[in-house]
Every structure is written in structure tokens, then in C-alpha cells.
Length: 167
Ligand SMILES: [Zn+2]
Image (cartoon, rainbow, N blue to C red):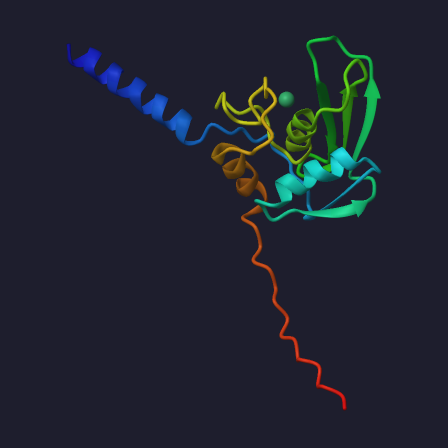
């Protein structure tokens, strides 16, 4: 009887810890915070969505994350594959499914992979393996990206000297 109570307590703890931190990190991450991308407005917007809640910024055009399109099985919206030197991601390519028009939800999910996130255990998260059509990051997605790149940096306000009126 004592054993059973212990087992139940353990299950509850495991259950709680899963919901508390459902995000999964792939391992490597970028060694710089300004992430560049190929000329694709969906890709740029998806990076902006992650940048709004974490230390990364959209670095404009470049080769960090690129996109191509290919005919994939109909149940797949897209996928991301990255290369790394073991510690850091050095390049990431997103392949979208040419069977469908571009989907912002797919882009956000795949950019999450490109930034180092794996599949979350939280079914409401953008990073859940079957992300659905959600366009808003959940608390779990935000915790995951902040675990990699820290929180959003506060904006730097420059003191501006008012222009002197000219007569
Ligand atoms: Zn995925």
C-alpha cells in the first residue's frame, strides 16, 4: 500500500514537471543574436515573432536561415534542417510544401526549429509536433526561446536634445 502511494505521488510529480517545462531544446543554438535570412517575407515575419519575446533580432538579408519549396507528402507542412559544429547552429534551411500556399503557422514552427527548439510536449504550443494554425506563441514557446537566448532586451532610449527654435 505504501508503495502504491509513492508511485502515485511520483506520477503526479512527473505530470506536473511536464506541464511546467514542456519545451524541448535540440542542443545547439546560434552563437550570435542577429539572425539573417533569405529574401522571403514570411520568413522575415516569423523571425520577428520570435524576436519580439527573446534576445534574438532579425538581422535582415543573409544566409543564416534560408527557405526553399519542394513537393512533400500531403500531411507535412514543411520541415527544417540545420547544421551545427556541435555547439552552435551554423545554417538552417526550411523546406515548405509546394502543394500548399505559404502558411505563417508553418514558418513560425520551422523557424523555432532553426533557432534550436525541438517539439514541445505541450499540445497548445506552436512547437508541438502538430502545431496547427496557431499564430501566437504560448508561454511554453516563450520559455523555450528565452532559455536559449534570454528575454527581450529593453530598448535603449537615447536622450534627444530638442531642436532650438530658429528665428
Ligand atoms: Zn516540427
